[in-house]
Image (cartoon, rainbow, N blue to C red; front, side):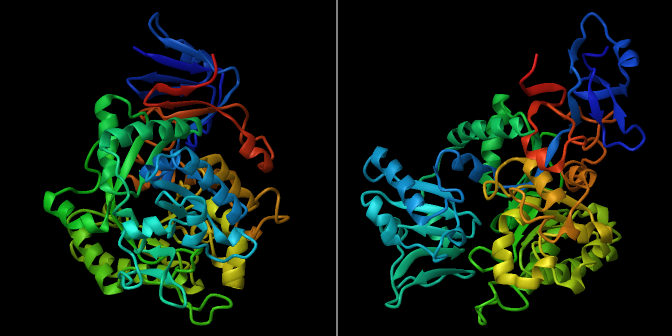
Length: 533
């Protein structure tokens, strides 16, 4: 008995045997049949709910394969300093929040990037003290690899001139040795540790707004890289019956021993909430110039970036995780970091081969692959490592990349290189580092432009076809999640996760892709968001 029929649609199934259709029949949250209106409507009964799509375009649901879900939920409640054009604008927004906050209340925010400001210099604690003298203030940088604290926040974290830099991090200091208020990499954890933490129930409430925005953007699944508190809140949503999109949860480095002791293996869970693998950080990021490079940053001959985990230690982590059934996802931005991570995976792949395990049983990933050395380009494909990349980073960071990496940028933010070598790719946004808008990522992938510039695209040879971009947000993440047999295309037997658009994404000019409107998002056969009759 068919429970739902969608007809009179323009359906791009992303399924080669049946690339197009006008109608779908759904049963128990899965696709029962794909075809034309006449053959599918014949399957209707008196109890079948029938939706006339009136020509709307339908695609498989989109997955964001790399984001920070807890941070995204919190960012929607915090001061929005995302890509503000000046330090003064950031301070004005903090001042506005401080005027409404109770004395002593923490003020947090996310998204500043000093490279967008005229001076391109890091701000300091005194700047924030001037506009919020009675509140501890802490603002995460857009990259997520630097933090900006005022004096009260530094005091609360116990940071002073005598505080040593933590391993893998740096407290920026003035000429007298005093902390300036800028914290890099693991030094950020000193403030994070004293920030007020919402309960799992409170965080779940905050996630509802983020979920609503994700569904309105066409996202039906996320791959999360935040702490266990995020998993706890997702479970609360599941228990309440309020979880409306699928989630794959990674295990961060410091929780690996506990995970291994529990016996958890990859894909533990179900189709709604499941375990992915181990998450490690090999290096920092481009914005604070902590990404680990073979050659120094332009204009800074002594700066090669920062390694956050020793290479031998990384082999130990990845090896132990693999032996217990967990793949690894390793953050690597700089070309030296990517090289080192590939060496790590090469060593672990040999161990897996000795145990008789196929590469598909450990779906290792490199997160970002932001710049790669030309001699390493083919190694992800050779080792069957997933390139988990964020196309929107290319258009967001291109000016900064050219400034600090120069001609090396032709090998930066470049999934074209990986696809041409036969590597698997999975695309995401890195939200809240970038907007939670997959259509913006698709646009960036096919145009390599931001607001029409540069003409022809930044390193235009790196542009992708529309189909390649769509597969990166559908079938690539499905494979990374171990769900390629039921997600990523519209095919009988697959889960009924799909989106409806107001126009045909294949028919519009690439520049119009960001203006396409998602009119409906269905997960497991139910409209979780719908803006049409």
